[in-house]
Length: 628
Image (tube, rainbow, N blue to C red; front, side):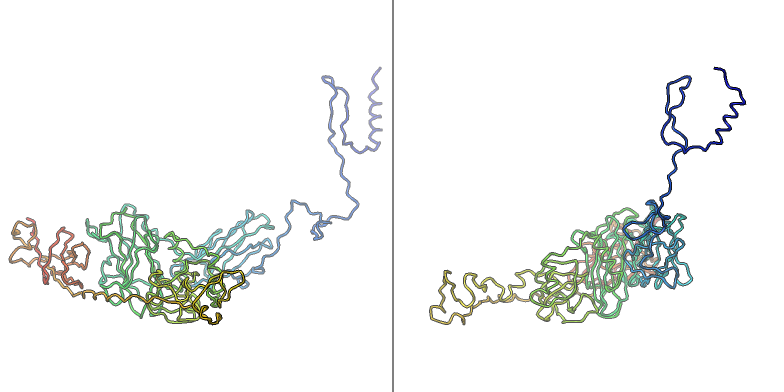
């Protein structure tokens, strides 16, 4: 077959262009067999185009009829709705947030929305405020807090407001993420926390530094502290000389208190190995009014509640619980924190939670019996209406100090009765903070007293209450009145044998009389004042008698007094009763109330000597040979 001329081919191609093309087919077609292969399947480049449905155009607004008619793509997020605080897009329309809780969820609607919140912070010297915003992955939040026109803090996701920031604070939350915020949300957590320990000692790991209140080793040199402030203290001896504090560092403090106010006094955040003892002095610098070694058995921190009887200065002594032995700790591991706070304040509530956690004292869970007693009032009495998640075992107790029975667990609650020491009460079970619910014959209604005013009493000490012994119980086989039921065994009594009316019989209860009281103990031996003047001087004459010190010299040379020498008055057990530093004249006066007949010694720690004193000795001269 001869090939067609080129002109005919062009004419055929031109005619083919005039014919309309049929729609492309989506199925595979066979082409001519290639030169080097078998028949292959070729997929066309064009596919069929989906024709639009004859229905109406799709709507961008979703409908609420169960999805019928909604044509929005399932991958698109439905627009978020405003949260409960909206509108709060200006400081004047700020939404109030509660403290110590998590609020939300909140949304960013519309896209450029800024949310404003209001915080009312109380004034507490040692409580800081931590604000944290937790958001979903599509938000990048920036927080800022202002008081009026003053910016007090700003940051991303979290802010910490110092204790000095109090009163109304406006918090602004804005989103910096450029992506759409539809469907995203966040929550705001506001917590009031005790300020953390000072990090000033971190730079001095190799050196032991005393705290900022030293040198407060006696009530004469005591440091005055404020109520409601947390102090970072330590048991590091302020005297760098070896063995200068043989019994460990003792911190003496003075606190101004007000009459009738109940205070929480506690140590906490103890470094490893530190064990404290807190003692209170009121009206005297020698007699201990109250004290506490361990808040819980086996613990180290100390805590107690105390009510000020009048306006004045409360003396405090904080000492290491080491039995008078030297305290050997790491240089930077002898610190503790201390605070005195009113029990009715926020700081006391935070401190109570902290010391319970650090003393490993779990919060008791309420038992069904305690919950029933809390709601019904127990023993047929009206309930207090106070619900508490804590409870203790019920039982007898004794009032140890004069206290007031309150209607509610608060110092401001109505007073039901005044309970004197040795008053017998019954513990009901519910506990609220440091308050315990009790019942007493002094009040018809049950009430609340402070736990520190109570002491558990054993059954032997309190005795069985009349009418509660098992001898008064009526037999279940015989109903009251003595009438026998048919088929029940009858009991013969003297009243029944005499023909008395059973309904009028009464069971006689015999209560044993208390034994005779023991003779009162002998009164304690009255203490007598003891005063001693010690003079320390240097001499160029050699010591006599072969001793190292010149105290045996018949005529001491006092022309060269030695100032600044620490002199201590101690007992035979090594307890320090009084101490002081010699003056420019080399003299120091030591005084203490002691029991008659106690053996006393004078200790000079710098030279490692102890001198026994005579019973009536009032002065002592110690001379030191000068070096040649």
